[in-house]
Image 1: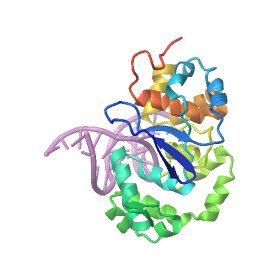
Image 2: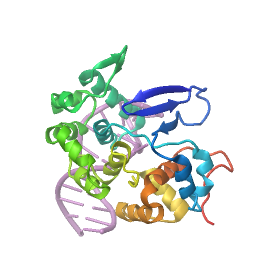
Image 3: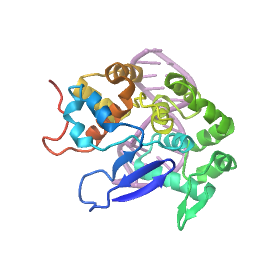
Image 4: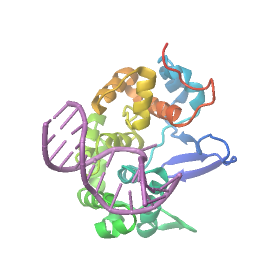
Length: 243
DNA sequence: GCCCAGGAGTGTG
DNA sequence: CACACTCATGGG
């Protein structure tokens, strides 16, 4: 096991052989969440209760708000290897070195100094304009104001920023601002809802379904549904549809 | 070379 | 509101 700090969260990684199909990150540690209580509540859901054993110990990550916001803007219409590369690239250029070959994520003021053209050179593509624009209209005071808003107002305000739509607004609300009631819907969650709950429809439709079904723990339900759908389960070790 | 990615913005029916 | 199209580029 390898433990490292990332902002105010602690990430626990597996150092076992890569051959296993287990996820690289075993657990997201966020001390204040009572996992036994969360699992007990989610176990009331007939579908989730079947898969809770598989996600024992999983905690939602609490990323720094700013790092989370930009990271998810970069993640739009991209893939994991490239997202990692984009983040590494802007960190090297605009962050500060925290160890040999390791750079911090650039803060707002540092990133604001970069032009859209320079950001494009980091491989951000059309996302460069989004990041540059967000840097202009956002500062520490605004982030502080956002952090005090209730979830619905927070996601609405986030959505006014360029490059932030429904999905990114919910990811930032959940992983950055720690709003556990947020329920980001991506292709995997959409797939899980159709397969396990026979629910389809618009983003708003699925979001409302989750709000009613999972309430204030929708974020944890989302993470478990996502993992269950994304990572192939061994036979007899996943959630099954139907009752 | 070809296809598409953990979406968002814009325009149209 | 529901689609369709475009966005810029690297990775599989």
